Length: 322
Image (tube, rainbow, N blue to C red):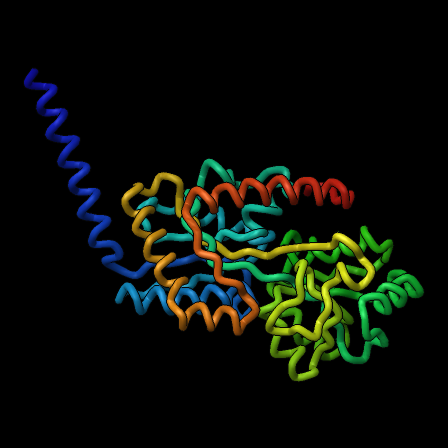
């Protein structure tokens, strides 16, 4: 009987300590690891979000860039970090949607190694070209590519990232041959695209809004079902002669799977609160992102559906896992 009481007392003490720890969280800076280079659209979105979280917490949310391998390096770093709430991952369409079907031997399990916390928001990709390209619509771009197979070059933020897979799906559905030139982040593609050495790219919309609005690049088509409110003059690719073409990019927050439930619950509440604040919502909308705070359960369901969607898309496009 005495042993049972000791066990009970120890258990209550542990629960009390965990609750107290969650109430005080965060007591020091929190890092959020991003799998793409600084300056790219994903990085920009996460930094906007992190700035508001830092203000709300009174503790810094520090953005750490770990680009490479289709953002899987960043996921592996967080999966192997202490599960104390101070190492978070910008889990996204690359780390948890595309990579499970694109890579044969991931160093992490996207389901077992992570606890989904909340979505930040969603955005389409956009097809942009250098103004020197003699194509002013998606249809004209397809015709140009078919007339010059293997002569057009497109850049991407890296093998396995959504811009890369979006163009590969586009090529598959349009029967075009456009040569891939991968980089380690969208920001590294831009000098080549702006100079005309690379003719085109798909990119997350937030990274291209300013270039399209100033005329430095020509926006041909977006990958969402509806036109973006921030660039309403750019038609969707589906309405431009490629029916059914749709890609949604999403940005979220995940923690190592063993993170305590009280800390996960507080993180979700704090993130949802921040994403419902008018100033943060407006900043995200101005950058082409639709804020989408949600419960951890709904986010887990979204990740599951995205994994299935991309598995089918990669198989249908004939892309072989690496």
